[in-house]
Length: 361
Ligand code: TRP
Image (cartoon, rainbow, N blue to C red; front, side, top):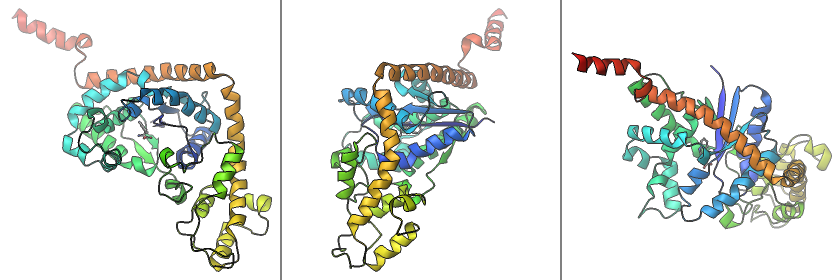
């Protein structure tokens, strides 16, 4: 069986370093590993509209921002198909058919939807489209016969719900859809990178994100004001690593080769951590190291972005080509689905024959 990846992001803002360590970096590795037959990366604008119905302009503006972020981290349109969800109308048809296989109570139990409803104060009145987006996400995944969905752990309930829909569909209508596997980030710190203020989640409204498109100066300023251990007041005080954002970021970003280059007094991160815990290591020194590590990772991304920013029509053209190719694949799956459901009346010669015999008796 071919190995196929599908994943994507809602275009509600520029992508930040949390997206990078949580998924983008991995996607580029997977892309370049040559292990996959096809890779689909989707800008989920239709899903973004499920909770931004009154702000379509925000989504419209961010489609190209996310595309630029994708291209700048090294997703290559010749290897990965980059496309826009709303342009593939087959996805909405699949969603409509799958929705017959899902109950309201099952959707209500989806932990991610539950948390999002609370976060958005939707308790009193939930938009139907938002409530049912896990079904549309199952359509996104199955339309491309994806075997592998690389996403963050918050998406686990979505993949689980997709797998249930696949099993249900296949048991009712016969083996048609492919059950996907989730592929989680491998490093614990990458599962959920906290905001620069130490809060659990990076969010634009909290102003605690480091964006991939931030300037060198912005990144430095954000790193130097990062949350650390509030009880680590004097350099000689012993320091705590738990909840210390600077060390969480180092877990996610630093590599052994960064030490000889930027901090040759230490051989590796463990030594640095030990010294911090013991006392005698100041926050500023650690932050300067983190800044160097981050800048070395972000500089090539920034440079590639600047190149693509010079030709925005070409970026849209890449998305159009990707969407055209994606539509062809989704149309094949939709035809499979209609055939399995036996609603392909006009190509079902046996049905036409059966019905005409009924009336010629
Ligand atoms: N729900 C994902 C997010 O919020 C975006 C998304 C939509 C997605 N459809 C998908 C991710 C299919 C993986 C597979 O970022």
